Every structure is written in structure tokens, then in C-alpha cells.
Length: 181
Image 1 (cartoon, rainbow, N blue to C red):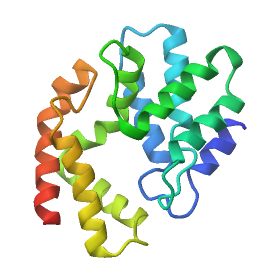
Image 2 (image 1 turned 180 degrees about the vertical axis):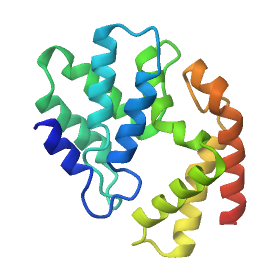
Image 3 (image 1 turned 135 degrees about the horizontal axis):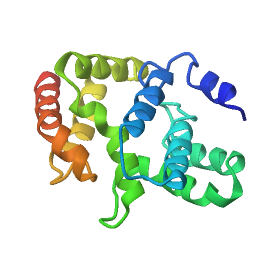
Image 4 (image 1 turned 90 degrees about the vertical axis):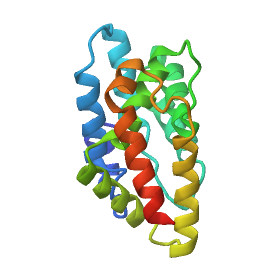
């Protein structure tokens, strides 16, 4: 699968947030990071490109399917690590000593710490992706997801991301939770 084919997957109908703009934002966040080896940067780049390649909001195995697809297409010497990183995006839980996992998850969650209008656009896009879910069920489900992040001691496992985004992420989560209730 070429980069063009990957990019095309992210332009499928119904992708309002989990689209090519999300991948470009994640790649831009990676580009701003210092202190990564060329090998680490390559692994993270592949994980970013592949982490949402399969996205169907009616399924619960998108991350696993994305990881499996990545493992079929990335170079053999990095495929296991790319697949492992992609699988972390299901729970967003990272072990304390998992540097690349902390970076990927922090990049993926950076939207939570966006300025207010951008966060609101993200929240609206997520609602569009779940348009098949009735309003009451959506509000309950979305609130449950947001609460799981809000109660975490650490939203961003990478310290640099935590310092930059944690306060605003918590404010955004509280604001959306209030709007959902």
C-alpha cells in the first residue's frame, strides 16, 4: 500500500475527524519534536500513518485491524514495533518506560489540548462520525469516554506534551462534559 493509497483511505466518506487532516496534524507534531533518532522517527511516522487507517465507528476493533494492516505493509524490521504502538491507541494506556508509546499517544491526544474553537470543531466532527447513534446514547457514551480521560492523573504520558497541553485539555474536557449533561 503506497502513501497515496493510505492517504485515500483517510478521505473515505464519514471521516470527519479521523481523516487526512488528523494524520497531517500528528505528523506536524512529530516534526516539532527533538531528540529522536532517525529509526525512532521512522517508527513513529509509520505508526501515525497507519494508526487510524481502518476506521469504522460501528466497530470496536479498528486499532487491531489497523495494526494488522500496518504489519503487512511496513518493513519487516519495524513491523512489530509499529503494530505495538498502533494497538496502544485503543486504550491510550502507556507503561512509564515506554518512550515511543508516550510520544505516539501524546501526539494522538494533542487535539484535547487545542484552543477552544479548534477543540469544539473536533468535538463536532466526532459527533458527525457517530451520527448513527441517537443523541441520548451519544451523550452518555461520549461523556463516559471524556470522563475516563478527565480522571487520569496524566492525560499526556510524554512530559513535554503534558506541560504544553494538560491544563487546556482538562478545561476542554470539563467544558464538553458540561455541554453533554
